[in-house]
Length: 356
Image 1 (tube, helix red, strand yellow):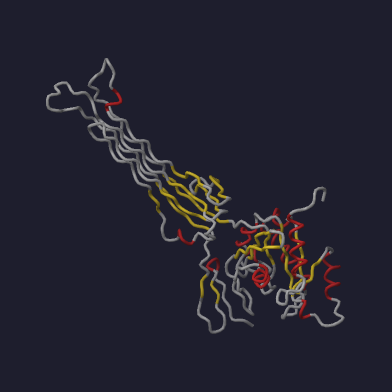
Image 2 (cartoon, helix red, strand yellow; image 1 turned 90 degrees about the vertical axis):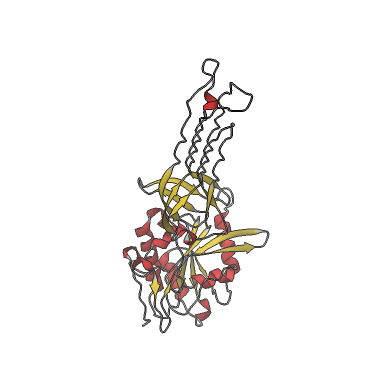
C-alpha cells in the first residue's frame, strides 16, 4: 500500500519519504476590481493683465481608467492572481484653469488564460467568457470626467458658475473560473498512462511516476501530425470511484474537459493491482455522469494501454472489447505501439467527412 493522504480540495499528496507537495495549479479565484473615478470639472475665469472682461476658462476633468481583462495564451493557470484581491485603475485628474483638461486615467489590463469565465460574485451570473488569444473585455468602466464651467458659457450666461463632478468608476466583485481550451480530454484511473501518452504525442512534460496521483494539475499538449495538422490534448488528474463525493482528488478537474470535442478514455488492461479493466471502464463513465450528463454524452475513443505487457495468446483485449460493446484501440504509450493509428482516429473524429 502506498502511504498517501488527500486532504479535501487542497490536493496534498504524501508519497513514501517525499515531503508534502501542493499543486500550484489554480483554476478558481475571487477578485475585486475598481475602475477609476472621473476627475471633477473646474470653475475658473480668465484673469489676465490688460484683459478686463475675461470669460470662463475652467477645464474638464479626465475620464477614469477602465479595468480590462485580456486573454493571453502564454498563461494556463490563474495562479498569478492569487494573493492580490483588489485591482484598481487610475482615476482621472481634475480640470484646471486656462482651459486645461485633466489627464485621463490609464486603463488597467489583467491578463488571464483563454478559457476564463468571469462571474459576478454577488449575483452569481456569467458576465464574460474569454475563449481566444488577445480577446479583451471591459469588466469595469471608468467614470466620466466632469465638465468645466467653460462648457456652460452661452450668450445669455457669459459667466457661468456651473461645473460637473466626475462620475465614479464601476466596482465589481468577481469570481474567475478557468476551463482549459482543448480538443481532446484524457480521462482514466490513476496510473492508466495518460501522462505518458501526452508526453509521447506532444512536447508537454507532465509528471510521470510509478504510483497513483502523480498528476496533480491539468496539462495541455499540442499534438502535431503530418500535413500541418494539429490538435490540443488535455490531461487531468486520475479519477477513482467516488470522486464525485470527494474521494481521491475529487472530480473538480473535470471542468477542464467540458469544452473538449471528444474524450479519450484510457484503460490499463494489465493493472498491477489486478482490478477488472471492464469495471474500471464503467467506474470512469459513472463518475463522468455524476459530474455532468453533458460530459458523459460526449463522443469517446476507448483506448487500452500497456499492450507491451501482454503475454502471448492473451485474450483480454477481445474480452474487454466485447464487454464494453464498442471499438477499442490497443496501444502502448511506452513503446509507441498504435500511437499513429490513435492520432489518425482522433483527427478523423475531430474533422469528420461530410455526411458522417
